[in-house]
Length: 402
Image (cartoon, rainbow, N blue to C red):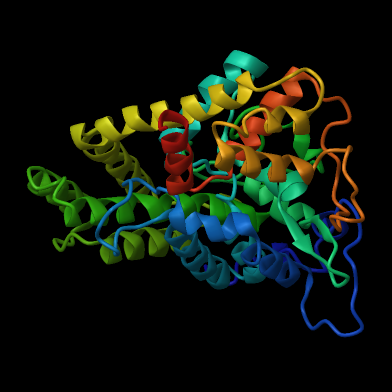
């Protein structure tokens, strides 16, 4: 029902409000600033390098020649649009959904979910823990991504708790209906696997569902454009028609059907939910996408290439560790891999203690006081995960070339 969540929105009347807008440290202030807390988060995100790089990161299809195939930055824009529509109808805080939506995939590695799986394999080998983009996104906005303040010093993004929670809680791969927020104000760093906790706000619940609505339809649209589904269109059309009654197969119909159904069926009592028919349809479409799109032969060759690229970059960086300092280790690469060496060195400088922080105009966190091998491996994973697809490939070409 329209505005049925108005009394539960993330605003000053919400009993969670002080927790929702809390930051790890206070933001610098200006004499004049017309933005609220979530608007400040939104602008901090869109001015970050991690956000800019999303336009050169794979959503599903790697390096398409067709400019109209979705990249990661278009995906977060679609999630922003869908979550705004739902939140606005239900009476929730649209500024918060916008900030969560555009930041929810900042932790994605190059080459999409396949890149994520490769980095997770490497992380398990040397660190004994998985790499997953939701937690990496939280680490990026908390520790990695920097912005200049009003004095031109670089600081951490330092987003509100609600946005940080929306990032680490957004996992859209879980098949569940009737999502409700948790009550506990937890330390978000206690997350150890995806979907471990429910989101803290209703707005984050909306983004979590909007993520899935966004990608299942758009991935079909792109696959049709690229000809991958030429032999499966009748099967897909029958699947859609049997459940909805509309015969025209396009992303517009899929999104409109799912969004309308969600708005109609969600309530504070039931949570953010679909009807059984719509929920089953969405899961059937997702299963179809996995079988006919994500696992198709056309994508497997590129997946094998991604593993070569990321594994070789990781192993090259690991091999340069000298047991003394991160910065001297990066210098060990300079003779044969000047681009990799300078890029990694500049990255490490931002987070190491053994630099002149005033000269570099840094006011961010020092990530590791102890420059151990495990910490070095963690920094490598952060560094690689921030790469765009083509930057990673260029570095790989430098490693294998002469």
